[in-house]
Image 1: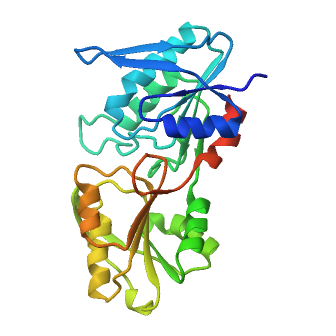
Image 2: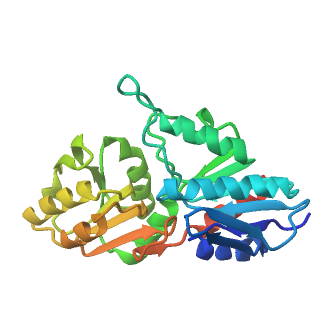
Length: 295
């Protein structure tokens, strides 16, 4: 069987090239152009008939990316591609997984329905499942959810002596606890009450028990950064000034990265599921086996 063709959607060339190398696959030259009115022009510069395609598109700023992805996937089918799958290291639209008020759109279900119509399979990393047990609950295609926790644990062991791992909320207890176990380090979780998108009340339990440890705040998504900023403030009050912030997905909403930097962590580190200057943990190796099995 021929190796899959890897198609890098705009902004995803680095990850696509790394994945092609690891898969011994072939990058499919693709031309993307915008007309003056903003509409997208797409041209595949290699034959697709009978080939299996791996589209690479991480979904930060998803509204800007989805239509291009749909055009690419459906055009590939029209041109004879045998299978069309998606590697989306960060998967958006997982927040609204139920209707909290009458009339609300459950966008996680709607987004899953749209992707399922255009794709044969999906691979992602640490989706924010929250109230969902698995992606299969809303996706109609085969999916694989991979986990960055072992990679984060290895990074911590190499980089941080005597860490104290700290999760953002009670829901993160199991996840952060697993990373802590791999590091051989203690862990605690923050007690958090959220009053809105940018209003979070934080308390840090028993922080005084660990005066000689380096606090390592770990979260799956760094979006507004407010939880970490509030926690950093409390660490400083306790005399712990060298805290490190680690995130899987570097979403960083408007002004969030600058605000977090200003809060004074010793370092901000993320995986490369979303390209950002804080990337220091490579996730590409996680993707190889699942992509081969599905493509």
